[in-house]
Length: 45
Image (tube, rainbow, N blue to C red):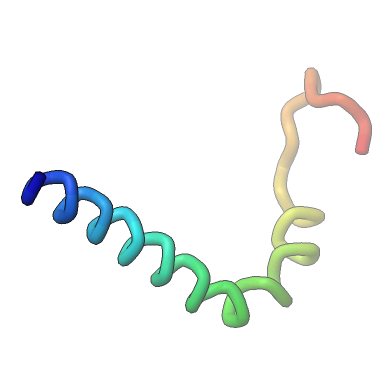
């Protein structure tokens, strides 16, 4: 049972770090995605 709590705590910590970093990366996503060099076989849009 102790290992289960460690696992859940580790997953929750990683998720919280991801959520906390969202405001810093959210504004850059549209520009970054539009600037990607896409392969010729990629679907449109």
